Amino acid sequence: MLILDSVLAQHIVDRAMAILPHNINVMDAQGMIIGSGDPERLHTRHEGAQLVLANRRVVEIDEQAAACLRGVRPGVNLPLMYAQQLIGVLGITGSPEIVRPYAELVRMAAEMLVEQRQLQAEHNWQRHQLESWLRLLLDPQQSLASLEAEAQRLDLHLHWPMQACLLELDDDSQSALRQARVLGALNAKSEHLCTLSGARELFFCRPVSLGRDDSAWLGSAAERDWGVRRLLVSDAAHSLDELRQASLALRDLQVYARARNPHERLLRLEQHRLSTLLYAQRHSWLLQGWLAPLKQVLKQDTNGALLETLRAWCEHDGQAQVCADALGIHRNTLRYRLERIAEYSGVELTRLDQRLQLTLGLELLDPE
Image (cartoon, rainbow, N blue to C red; front, top):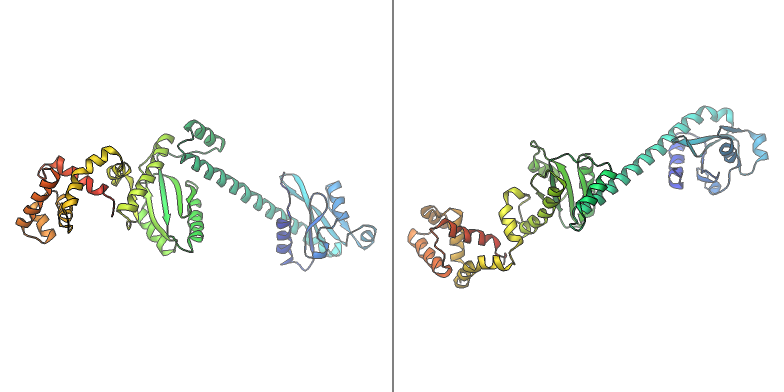
């Protein structure tokens, strides 16, 4: 059963008295005044309200009746109902003949405010439950069976295929306010499931849409000064298991993006899949062996010319003249540098498979 609290009661009073030139009182289910235009009457018992509560009907009190009751003044007192339950009493102070025409209108407005508050509370509770469910999705220790059971309890219907998304915000004094704005905008779309995943992060899931333009959305976010730094988007997921894996993969993509693409605002997992996979394992023994030839080159590269040349060579797929032009050097100089790289690394640069080892190795190097 809904309990009428003093905050809502005073809100009803303030709204009504902004229109009517009469004092309004709101009493709880025990007949105590918890909202009033007269502060001195707060937290006192209203015997007229107790009559309303006992008889579940409108009680009008004139001057003569008021003199016989304690804490009562002339007026009209009406039962406040919600979902067919008596939750309190609304009183309008004044001669019943004068205030009677306003009584039903004020009660109707009050009951609408009560209903609105309750619907908002239920909406907030539902959002809180969905946010808790999303946090369980991000926790690999939680079983998929328990996640599915919780989704059924919440009557949560996921529209497959879905995408996991991670939104990063700028780190400044306005980050909390901006986070609230973005969260509100995302939650405004019923198909979005969104939660805070960090001090300056938002995680959300959404149905896949071919017509969605994330670049345009980022532009709109910038115009609204939401402080969005970066949006990371996963592949399409077709089941709860895939959605969890996609969500966890976004964390690896985030680490890769911060190290290798710090200024790129939109990153899709499908475009950085291999780099993300390898970067997540960059400290493993197997990947360190992969990097060993490249590290031999770096040991001999005192001025960075060999690393610059190797990057250009890989970027232009081993096309000598195009690479030399991009570097602004003669082809003979390019050939000399490539020979040094091959000598130090033991890798034959003309072979695609071996050149690929160095190409991917460049993506795994720590920025420093």
